[in-house]
Image (tube, rainbow, N blue to C red; front, top):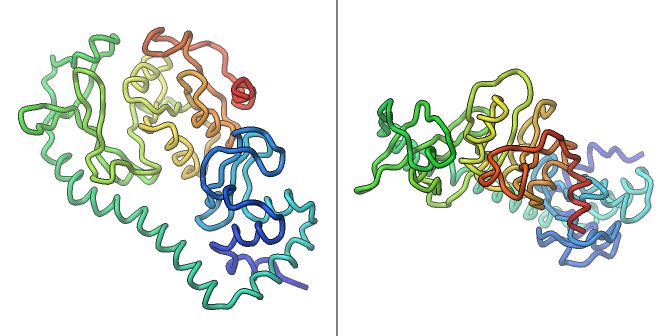
Length: 308
């Protein structure tokens, strides 16, 4: 009898080849872009990530079928039961030379290490010095963008770049480690990452204290302040719609999390759908226009259906 726990470590990085061989799927399925699902056929609802539980696991997400690793997709696409799927994968990986498997494994490990290391190194070299040099804003200082939306500032830190003063926020991962810094224009609310790579996956800036109830995730910094004012709850600003999914993926406990979508944004709604989280929507086309949210909590799958 084949032990799946023995086979699984050998599959890292091999899932595109396994699925192409066993299920006949096309190369384009693995390009990481939104596209038709090879299982249900739904338009623009499937995305290959190769990272559901860990990088290289064959993971993919479909708004209709759900998210699963490579084994889950093999069974779904082929119709195999688990024992037959295990034998199919075992036969395949044993057919592949050990040297090839090691190359694939090292490629995945290198991608994973490079993705995290580049941000950590750059944070030490650039973001951390900026944060250390930052100075508290005067108590009576209200940024122009705050005045526009009726937000009262608190504990703002400022950093000078040349002749210009920027609000500066730390960007932290789920463990609380600083992995980036965000420079924010006090006049417009526009922001730029301090790191040269320009982004930090799983990074967020926390606004407000934890009330013990729900925590809301959003993509925009000004949105985050408005949401905090409306809900009186803690808000995590993820700075990018795609990064909302990465933040959620990095969290072991999502029971108190909800997602804010400023309109029908596919990436934001897909992230909420992946983890069965409720969605807040603006009362109107945009939160920056209405400055309030609808009282109803929406189902992400229902909202995604409106995009079909």
